[in-house]
Length: 204
Image (cartoon, rainbow, N blue to C red; front, top):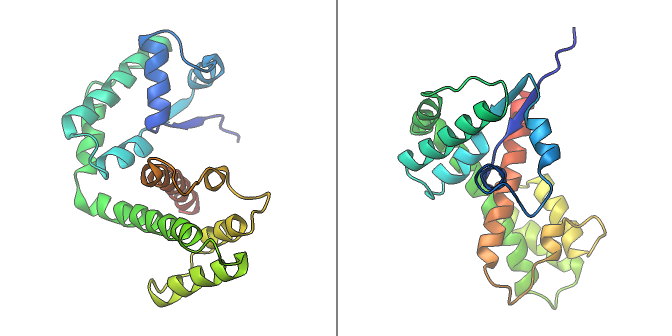
């Protein structure tokens, strides 16, 4: 039996685009293919990335989060055959107020953020080092100070230090005097966080 369903995750960026198209009727990009994708008959919507991104970082309070999600629910019900769930947003936000639920997620995010900070710090702190020596410095910090060896992040750092064609675009944009560098790293850590949670969910 094949079940044709779509699970669509909303993070802050996607919600921002969606609000632009519903409130202003236009965006900087062509949103019509995404709207078509969103209107699939069996589409299910996941607000976890948005909730994790903003609740853990403290960008929104409970009332704001509830209002944001509730507005999306209303817009989705207007634009397709989808029943509006008046209490759904409040139920989701209440779930994220449970420390037993959020603490493990917060730990994963902070660890990923720390890894990225260390990777970039080594590159900017020791520009005179060879790629090999930069990577060795990373291995030293990871093993002696963090007692960890996160293979995905180490692989990304290896490509970054060696200026490989496989280097993730995020790292290619890093400059010594870049404004809002910390904010850029934080945004990247959220992207990794979403991927990590998705992979863990698939494994479970």
